[in-house]
Length: 111
Image (cartoon, rainbow, N blue to C red):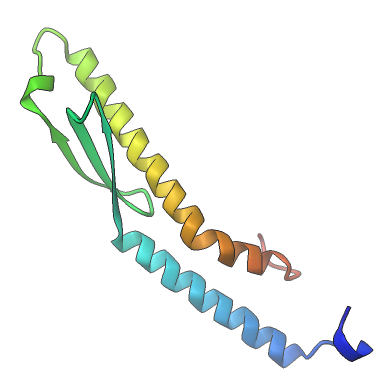
């Protein structure tokens, strides 16, 4: 219900939408600059990704390297990258969740 029963102020709605769009862009930039880590094998393999999911670094402890068992190393790498991406998604939810919810009530926006 609109206070006073009048029509919504379109200028005010547009300003709110622009501010939310700017806030969303800032949050996305922050995510791209923030790094999170995931690990596997008790820390033998560590993967670092940005908050937007870009793989930035991979650290492998020499103890994890067995020339006779590269399959286990590959599994540890995949698990570490998945853990890092899970952490990135949690960060995205923290940063973007409130903004997406705010935009969700506006007609015509794909949220």
